Image (cartoon, rainbow, N blue to C red; front, top):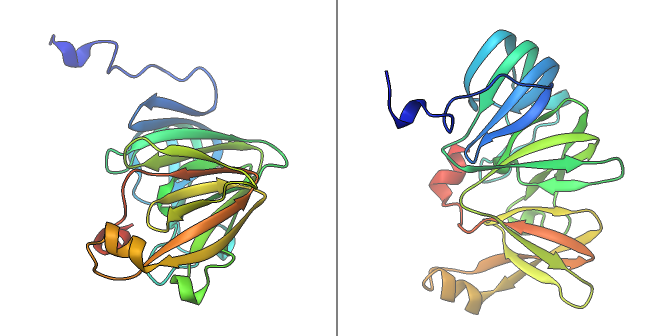
Length: 225
């Protein structure tokens, strides 16, 4: 057979080294040689000798769910082979985490990550019960983290002079050293939600960056993730 479908643009190539690489804008390839972790249901294809084990309570039993039903159900992938991961044709990005780095990310944006990374679920400081019980995943260690995002994310610098306010439904993650607190604004909520209710923003202060996606999670979609 011939045609554009069979061009080099779409034909996958064998992995040249173990680990995570971007197959294309919507998919991450992982050359497994041992163990790695991915969100349940994200594997779209694999080849080789791989075993998939559902981690019903997350790594080390640390999974917690927010009031909205969000969480990070994981699976372990072990063996030797190649696996491809994607989620609802969202854009994929790879973050390199080095020793000393701390990256806080919303569980709905996690696609896959190296087993060398340490993963914990923590409550967002300043956004407890009053903020709907915001739980985020905190990654430390050394390795690669694969993320998904609806559309192209915005990376916004945060400085002591200029705190950043982000919608709790749109935030993807933020760097270490930022202080978080919940900020409510009736006028802002009326503006972006058509007056349907009070909106809550997460205020981030300090030195670092925050990642925001250009869309908000609807209640129905948040429950599906």
